[in-house]
Every structure is written in C-alpha cells, then in structure tokens.
Image (cartoon, rainbow, N blue to C red):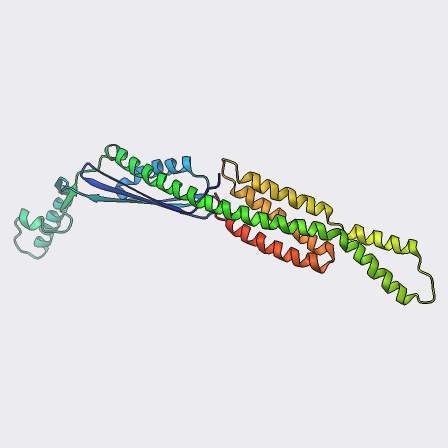
Length: 292
C-alpha cells in the first residue's frame, strides 16, 4: 500500500455556542512535523490534537488550523481593579495637596481612568468543548488520509510503469553485454593485423588481452544487483507499512549500479541505454519523495 504525503481534510462541528472548523493539510517532509495553529484560549488542547495525528501518520509536514467562532452571545462581566483604583485616588489626593487645591473622591471619575474597569467573558470550559473539536479533527484526518491513499495509488501505478521501462532497458543492456567483448576482440584483431603486416599474430597474446578487457568491462554483478533492486522495489510497493525511506534507499542503490555499468561497459550502445535508465531513475526518485 502506497500513501502520498500530500493531502487535505476538513471537519466541522457545532456545539456549546461555538462553530468549530478544523483544516488539516500535509506536504512532503523527510520526517513527521506537525504544526498546530489554535486560538490562545484553546492552547491546552494542542497536544491532544497532535497525538491523534501522530497515531495515524508517519511522515510529512502536517499543518492543522483550528478555527473557532461564537454562534451565541457569551456571558460577560465587569471586573474592577480595586487596588489600582485606590492607587489612583491616593495619587490624585497627593497631587491636590501639592497644588494646594481641594480634592473629593469621585467614583465616576475614577472608573474613567485606564484599566480600572475591564469587560471579561466567562472562561471557556476546555473539557466540555474537547469532544466537539476531537470529532472535527477525526473527520478532517479521515479525509486527509483518504486523499493521501488515493494519491498514493496513482503514484504506485506510475512507478510500476517506470520500473517496467527500467527493467526493459536492463534486459537490453544484458543482451548487449556479451557482444561488447566479441566486438572488442574483432577490432583489436584488425588493428593488430594492420600494425603487424610482416609478422604473424600471436593468438595467445590476443586472447589474453581480450580476457583482461572482458574482466574490466564485466557488468554481470551490477546487472544482477540492479535487477534485484528493481524486484525489491516492486515488492515494497505491496507492503502495508510506510515505505518511502526504503524506496529512497533502493533508488540510490539503483543509481549507483547504473553509474557503474555506464563507466565499466565501454560501449556506446550501453552508454545510451544507461542515459535512458538514469532519466527514468530521476523521475522515479522525484515520485518517491512524495511517498510516506
């Protein structure tokens, strides 16, 4: 099962005079990174939201937006800062004495001074609103996971197609490989024949030179490993757990074997096939970056 790391989900709930709206979006990331943006008076719920998401995702940068709107008027009350009022009154008396004028305490004048009175709302009951937020988070997360799964299925189909093309290129290289040695032997024989027009060709020396070339240019082991990596990649696509890091490692290994084949083969036809293979591997690598 292949899951993409890209997705989006939205959940909504109404209750207790609030409209709760949760949006979750995720993008590619090497590890799991969860960012929760939530109103300050609901901050205590951030860790609970993070835990729900951690249980159902493994990788990706996941951003959670918690929006809360009031649907009913909330009870409000006026708070009096008595200590501040006394301090104002004392300071005004001292000022009046300094200016040699009369001063009479006036409550209505005092309450007009900054921060004596403040209007506050009833504190939010976090435990009461949590079930509504939790339900909205689960709804958004379900949509997110469904989208990641759908995107993952498309990625898997594309990867399988590219792996078939890479497998075909590998087979062409395998078929071409034995011809490289025989063609080298013939070219070497022709060059030596021109150089040694008056001297007989030492067949043993020729065969020794060809054997040395065949050993240097042998790509059998690289082809075997490359085919093995391709099959491991296909098998990994059927696994149920997150496979993104494993696929990334296999792509690196396939690139390494392909580069070695290109450097050892010493053949124009194989070089062209290697270039095509590396092009496919680059496209595979780009797609793998999207997989959880």
